[in-house]
Length: 351
Image (cartoon, rainbow, N blue to C red; front, side):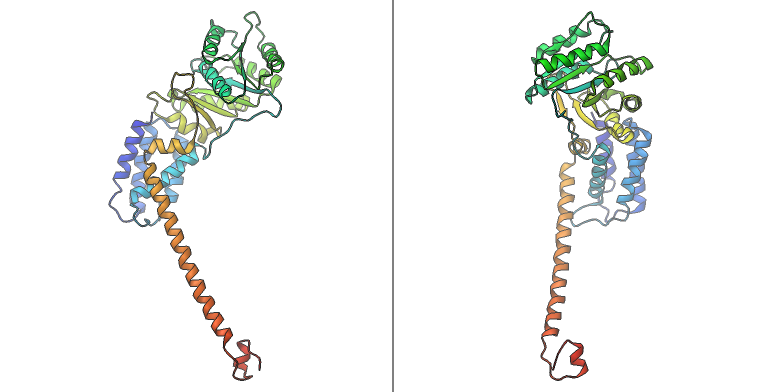
């Protein structure tokens, strides 16, 4: 993922090398190229527009710091804004004050929701949270079988009832089982649809109302690009999402979903799926993702160190200036008074 976007951004930054200052002309040209690179990566148009406005505002008029080229300075600006776009910091999972912590997974059919449920359960088990998986998909043939097979791989128990058709009743019974067996986490694998529909949303709303989950996480296919924004917006409007898990980010996804969802919906990305292995679920880190997109962590660090050095030199210069001013004041106030003339009195002297 991101290979094409990375290559295009790299070519943009190369064009700025060798110039002594970031000017309005070269910034505007660079922004046009960055815009095309982001749109080709299937990033949401409004997100691109807002992102470029912030980058351009920061970049214009900046003088290049010592040993830092304009291209590198722009990398730093773009990097910082990418981090901001992606959420700035890791978004931790909410933990219920009284166990079990209920996590409701939602999403469309084919997004990898059931596989993600097992991966999340394995992660909880590794953290000592003793999870229980609950099969709430009463529509898809063999959905329960799939969840049980995946749960067996990660060593986590499953609550299921193939005869029960009432999803809310299933969810409440799963919660009772989790409490009785002292599980610290309950992961609800809900049913998906081929598209968002009123019936699906109403069912999920009833489950949420009955169990008050600590987390409502959308599992979205990272391959869908900015279409993931429409999906996320629909689920968020209906359910009030607390986070997103992006799947299939190890493939040839262009990155549009990762760069669009937070900026367009305000919903944080909490995990990313990076493979088929049971442990291939990573905490989403905006800084690491920005580094990955730009593949220029070394340049970002260089600019940060140059900025720190510049700030330190400026602080030392001001300190020396203040010190000189203080010494001058001390010498003036320490002069002996020769008389009681008004000029002496104006220096604070007394006869």
